Length: 193
Image: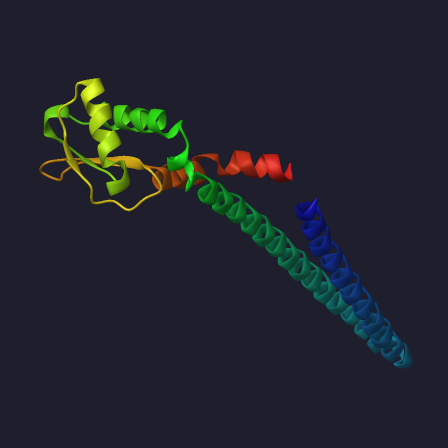
Protein backbone atom coordinates (compact mmCIF):
# COMPACT_ATOMS: atom_id res chain seq x y z
CA UNK A 1 0.00 0.00 0.00
CA UNK A 2 2.94 2.38 0.68
CA UNK A 3 3.98 2.12 -2.98
CA UNK A 4 0.57 3.16 -4.20
CA UNK A 5 0.47 6.02 -1.67
CA UNK A 6 3.90 7.25 -2.81
CA UNK A 7 2.91 7.13 -6.47
CA UNK A 8 -0.44 8.78 -5.72
CA UNK A 9 1.35 11.54 -3.75
CA UNK A 10 3.62 12.23 -6.72
CA UNK A 11 0.62 12.28 -9.05
CA UNK A 12 -1.34 14.64 -6.75
CA UNK A 13 1.67 16.94 -6.55
CA UNK A 14 1.92 16.97 -10.34
CA UNK A 15 -1.80 17.65 -10.70
CA UNK A 16 -1.54 20.58 -8.27
CA UNK A 17 1.42 21.94 -10.21
CA UNK A 18 -0.48 21.61 -13.50
CA UNK A 19 -3.52 23.35 -12.01
CA UNK A 20 -1.31 26.15 -10.68
CA UNK A 21 0.29 26.59 -14.12
CA UNK A 22 -3.10 26.62 -15.80
CA UNK A 23 -4.47 29.22 -13.39
CA UNK A 24 -1.42 31.42 -13.80
CA UNK A 25 -1.54 31.07 -17.59
CA UNK A 26 -5.23 31.91 -17.60
CA UNK A 27 -4.63 35.01 -15.47
CA UNK A 28 -1.79 36.14 -17.73
CA UNK A 29 -3.97 35.59 -20.79
CA UNK A 30 -6.81 37.60 -19.29
CA UNK A 31 -4.41 40.44 -18.50
CA UNK A 32 -2.99 40.42 -22.02
CA UNK A 33 -6.50 40.35 -23.48
CA UNK A 34 -7.54 43.31 -21.32
CA UNK A 35 -4.50 45.25 -22.51
CA UNK A 36 -5.19 44.33 -26.12
CA UNK A 37 -8.83 45.46 -25.86
CA UNK A 38 -7.74 48.93 -24.82
CA UNK A 39 -5.99 49.34 -28.16
CA UNK A 40 -8.07 50.29 -31.15
CA UNK A 41 -8.47 49.06 -34.70
CA UNK A 42 -6.37 46.39 -36.42
CA UNK A 43 -3.55 46.88 -33.92
CA UNK A 44 -5.89 45.72 -31.18
CA UNK A 45 -6.80 42.54 -33.07
CA UNK A 46 -3.20 41.78 -33.92
CA UNK A 47 -2.03 42.17 -30.32
CA UNK A 48 -4.90 40.09 -29.09
CA UNK A 49 -4.08 37.33 -31.54
CA UNK A 50 -0.38 37.41 -30.70
CA UNK A 51 -1.10 37.43 -27.00
CA UNK A 52 -3.40 34.43 -27.28
CA UNK A 53 -0.84 32.50 -29.32
CA UNK A 54 1.95 33.41 -26.92
CA UNK A 55 -0.07 32.43 -23.87
CA UNK A 56 -1.19 29.18 -25.47
CA UNK A 57 2.38 28.32 -26.44
CA UNK A 58 3.67 29.18 -22.96
CA UNK A 59 0.85 27.22 -21.29
CA UNK A 60 1.53 24.13 -23.43
CA UNK A 61 5.24 24.34 -22.72
CA UNK A 62 4.70 24.65 -18.96
CA UNK A 63 2.21 21.78 -18.92
CA UNK A 64 4.60 19.61 -20.89
CA UNK A 65 7.43 20.38 -18.47
CA UNK A 66 5.20 19.68 -15.46
CA UNK A 67 4.09 16.34 -16.92
CA UNK A 68 7.67 15.37 -17.69
CA UNK A 69 8.78 16.32 -14.18
CA UNK A 70 5.92 14.26 -12.72
CA UNK A 71 6.80 11.27 -14.91
CA UNK A 72 10.44 11.43 -13.81
CA UNK A 73 9.42 11.52 -10.14
CA UNK A 74 7.20 8.47 -10.56
CA UNK A 75 9.99 6.57 -12.34
CA UNK A 76 12.48 7.54 -9.62
CA UNK A 77 10.07 6.41 -6.90
CA UNK A 78 9.50 3.08 -8.66
CA UNK A 79 13.25 2.53 -9.11
CA UNK A 80 13.85 3.27 -5.44
CA UNK A 81 11.19 0.73 -4.46
CA UNK A 82 12.72 -1.90 -6.77
CA UNK A 83 16.17 -1.29 -5.31
CA UNK A 84 14.75 -1.69 -1.80
CA UNK A 85 13.19 -5.01 -2.82
CA UNK A 86 16.53 -6.27 -4.17
CA UNK A 87 18.36 -5.00 -1.07
CA UNK A 88 15.89 -6.88 1.12
CA UNK A 89 16.43 -10.03 -0.95
CA UNK A 90 20.20 -9.61 -0.54
CA UNK A 91 19.86 -9.25 3.24
CA UNK A 92 17.65 -12.34 3.42
CA UNK A 93 20.00 -14.42 1.27
CA UNK A 94 23.03 -13.28 3.28
CA UNK A 95 21.90 -15.64 6.05
CA UNK A 96 21.24 -18.67 3.82
CA UNK A 97 24.56 -20.32 4.73
CA UNK A 98 23.17 -21.19 8.19
CA UNK A 99 20.19 -23.07 6.74
CA UNK A 100 20.23 -26.84 6.05
CA UNK A 101 19.24 -26.36 2.40
CA UNK A 102 22.42 -24.36 1.73
CA UNK A 103 24.55 -27.48 1.18
CA UNK A 104 22.22 -28.63 -1.61
CA UNK A 105 22.25 -25.12 -3.14
CA UNK A 106 26.06 -25.04 -3.03
CA UNK A 107 26.16 -28.43 -4.78
CA UNK A 108 23.89 -27.00 -7.48
CA UNK A 109 26.14 -23.93 -7.84
CA UNK A 110 29.20 -26.20 -8.18
CA UNK A 111 27.45 -28.40 -10.77
CA UNK A 112 26.56 -25.31 -12.78
CA UNK A 113 30.12 -23.96 -12.94
CA UNK A 114 31.78 -27.33 -13.52
CA UNK A 115 29.40 -27.95 -16.40
CA UNK A 116 30.43 -24.65 -17.96
CA UNK A 117 34.23 -24.93 -17.89
CA UNK A 118 36.59 -27.87 -18.58
CA UNK A 119 36.84 -29.91 -15.31
CA UNK A 120 40.58 -30.70 -15.33
CA UNK A 121 41.48 -27.06 -15.84
CA UNK A 122 39.20 -25.66 -13.14
CA UNK A 123 39.81 -23.63 -9.99
CA UNK A 124 36.84 -23.13 -7.65
CA UNK A 125 36.85 -19.90 -5.68
CA UNK A 126 34.88 -20.13 -2.42
CA UNK A 127 34.42 -18.27 0.82
CA UNK A 128 36.64 -19.85 3.52
CA UNK A 129 33.45 -20.74 5.45
CA UNK A 130 32.42 -23.00 2.54
CA UNK A 131 35.75 -24.70 1.86
CA UNK A 132 35.12 -27.89 3.86
CA UNK A 133 31.60 -28.36 2.49
CA UNK A 134 32.88 -27.67 -1.02
CA UNK A 135 35.54 -30.42 -0.67
CA UNK A 136 32.86 -32.88 0.51
CA UNK A 137 30.61 -32.02 -2.43
CA UNK A 138 33.51 -32.41 -4.91
CA UNK A 139 34.26 -35.89 -3.45
CA UNK A 140 30.59 -36.88 -3.74
CA UNK A 141 30.45 -35.61 -7.33
CA UNK A 142 33.81 -37.25 -8.08
CA UNK A 143 35.23 -34.02 -9.42
CA UNK A 144 38.89 -33.12 -9.26
CA UNK A 145 39.15 -29.35 -8.95
CA UNK A 146 41.51 -27.04 -7.17
CA UNK A 147 39.85 -25.02 -4.40
CA UNK A 148 40.93 -21.50 -3.61
CA UNK A 149 39.22 -19.93 -0.58
CA UNK A 150 39.75 -16.34 -1.71
CA UNK A 151 36.15 -15.06 -1.76
CA UNK A 152 34.14 -13.11 0.74
CA UNK A 153 30.51 -13.64 -0.12
CA UNK A 154 27.13 -14.67 1.22
CA UNK A 155 27.53 -18.05 -0.43
CA UNK A 156 28.08 -19.77 -3.72
CA UNK A 157 31.13 -20.36 -5.84
CA UNK A 158 33.05 -18.78 -8.70
CA UNK A 159 35.13 -20.81 -11.11
CA UNK A 160 38.02 -19.95 -13.39
CA UNK A 161 40.38 -21.76 -15.71
CA UNK A 162 43.98 -22.06 -14.58
CA UNK A 163 45.13 -19.68 -17.29
CA UNK A 164 42.56 -17.11 -16.12
CA UNK A 165 40.97 -16.77 -19.55
CA UNK A 166 37.51 -17.76 -18.32
CA UNK A 167 35.64 -16.87 -15.16
CA UNK A 168 32.14 -17.93 -14.14
CA UNK A 169 30.52 -15.96 -11.32
CA UNK A 170 28.00 -18.01 -9.38
CA UNK A 171 27.87 -16.47 -5.92
CA UNK A 172 24.62 -15.39 -4.32
CA UNK A 173 25.56 -11.77 -4.98
CA UNK A 174 26.26 -12.49 -8.68
CA UNK A 175 22.96 -14.34 -8.98
CA UNK A 176 21.06 -11.44 -7.41
CA UNK A 177 22.73 -9.05 -9.86
CA UNK A 178 21.72 -11.28 -12.80
CA UNK A 179 18.20 -11.48 -11.42
CA UNK A 180 18.07 -7.67 -11.22
CA UNK A 181 19.00 -7.42 -14.87
CA UNK A 182 16.82 -10.28 -16.13
CA UNK A 183 13.71 -9.96 -14.00
CA UNK A 184 13.50 -6.22 -13.30
CA UNK A 185 10.69 -5.69 -15.86
CA UNK A 186 8.68 -8.63 -14.49
CA UNK A 187 9.15 -7.56 -10.87
CA UNK A 188 8.24 -4.01 -11.79
CA UNK A 189 5.09 -5.30 -13.47
CA UNK A 190 4.17 -7.33 -10.37
CA UNK A 191 4.76 -4.37 -8.05
CA UNK A 192 3.23 -1.60 -10.14
CA UNK A 193 0.98 -3.31 -12.67
